Amino acid sequence: MNRGLLILLIGGAMLALGCSSDDEEVERELVYHDSFPVPLETLAGTYAFTAEPQDDPPRLRSSEFAMPEAVADFSRLSLVVEGSWTPGSREIEYNLGGGDVIHDTLAVHGRLQFELTIPVDPEKTYYAVVVPLGEAFYVDVSIVAGWSGGQVNAEDLLGVDLEATLSCAITLGENERLLEPSFGTVTAARLELGAADVYEKSDGFLLLGDR
Image 1 (cartoon, rainbow, N blue to C red):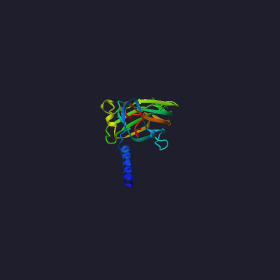
Image 2 (cartoon, helix red, strand yellow):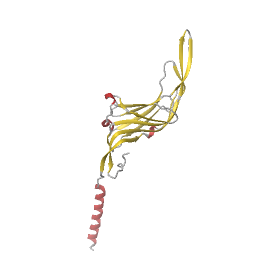
Image 3 (cartoon, rainbow, N blue to C red):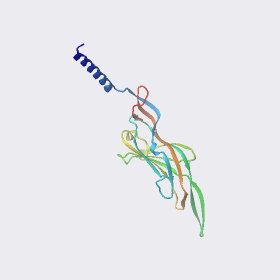
């Protein structure tokens, strides 16, 4: 065979292979999920509410993230938090009049406050409150918007950078003081997108980098 023709045939075959691999489109379809998880791994860890704020354990943890690109729409949004918690204690002072004052000591569990913010649109913030109880707790709570009657709008949350914060909080009255801190560990935290439409490859696997 002519050497020039052989080189031409080999070059053509290689070009054809390259074009087929580069130009091949990934077939995908829209699949309905009753619930689709979005992990918030950096919210896991220890938390504590002490009389004075401290760095370790902290009162607050945050996570910067974006919704998976494969998510096309969803109708509900909830927060799932798992972990363990130890209640603290508070002292309450009662003034009975006539100079008589008594004190009582009660447990204080505290709460975990969740905020989901959109840095490019800071007026729109989503909220949830978790009350952690017991050595092993699992809480699934709805997330509500701070405006428009609390309705979640998926369009606001897709295709933008987001920031989530989880913080430990305790409300004390004027006649109360914290004796022992309330503290615990969050072992897992995630968003659950309810009634979600998600693009998947035709073979049933999620697209690369979509989760």
